[in-house]
Image (cartoon, rainbow, N blue to C red; front, top):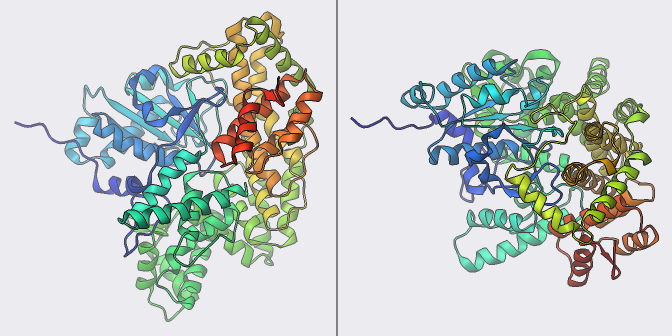
Length: 630
């Protein structure tokens, strides 16, 4: 008797195929995620510019502890887990997906129970019986949004879950700096963007000459928009640029912000095939529905509530036809007897639209104030981001200012001179250990880290310790406010400087790494400890510099110094002379030189440059400034 085939359920396949935004196919029909997915590069946390291929996570050698994948909202963490689920099943594993938004388990046994319930829903009955049966040794747990469960960190999960799962992969919006088996999703460089463009073009034409022409046009448009340095190079933005700009009769992209691209992605499916009056009705109903969810109505609305909203806005409209349009456009999805927004972005956009349209109402203003007071919550942060894009009302600007004042109130979180002096001493010590070989030592360390051969710092937390502090919510709030300020600035409404907020965010990120020093002087540490600490610091600085370059491109003024100079390198038209002059005038500021090297390497990876500029950036990335090495 043959063994039953282990297959995903049809409903779970629909979830896996959903790319999160609607990608059109010429001639009709939606595009599935596998058709346009490109595996991102992952950087081991604290590895500088080194990356690994994300499919390699399925190597069970990684199972020494849960693997953590971090990245900001919109970086593609959920799409990566979906694609890994398909790949894992094809390789004989039994993947099970759970979402921290829906399964906030308090301990390992609770997570195991949630995983068993998820397997029952995600596999056919015969498959679920095997996946949940005794002796299933190749189960893989894919735990999305782990940081939303309220748990302090991934370390405590290791022993309990790895007895039950061959591999555990978690995602989170912010890293756990003291947790070693941790990776961050890096922005797509030119090579991965070209791969994504080729997939997108293949959906539109099979003619080689036409495909080559369309790909060249697409590459030019994407490079031009990303070259404004106002949105990060993540797949969702590249795809939305392609969808909104690269058509037979469109030559460019008018908008340059998170809000603009997501407004296009959210509203396009509703606009297609509808009249202006129909779209106005859809927008009014959905914004009212989103507002009711925001004010405590829960994420789902039953058919009676939705029908009532439709009749309130259009008594003569056929409710069945309107609901059908919502489902067909994948703006809403049916969940048993109820309906809910199919994506968080649609929910956030329409909630913000209601707030913007009704901002004169006292109750609405109270709700806006409440949203801005709790930006550590992902839904509030998303709504506030769209509100900054949609509304020019001074009340919104006032609430942004209140949030910035609250987030920057603690001077202790700011970057200080003592930290820079310590890192300068750290780098100087490594150079003394092996003069002239620091770059080779760095490369060797990255290989050891990717193979799991590095060891924790002595005196620091043991492997698997939590990297989250009690200030995690403050970290989330500063990140949300930085995105919100960028939106407001792009719309010409930025009245509050974001530099102090960025500095507070950076210092909060660095504080957990500072704790590893425990009062040590760099000279008392062995070479491995020095490298581990330096790589951790550089990992945070790399992410922070990219964020700063996005902020400065939106109009933010940054005080003169290494941060501003490094951010000025992270663009298609880099200010190389300023970086060179600073390095020559400050030869002993080793951290500053390291920041310039990091920024030059990232600029080469992200942006196309002319031959001469590319040559100069390559030299800077290796420490050569005008022929001198620093």
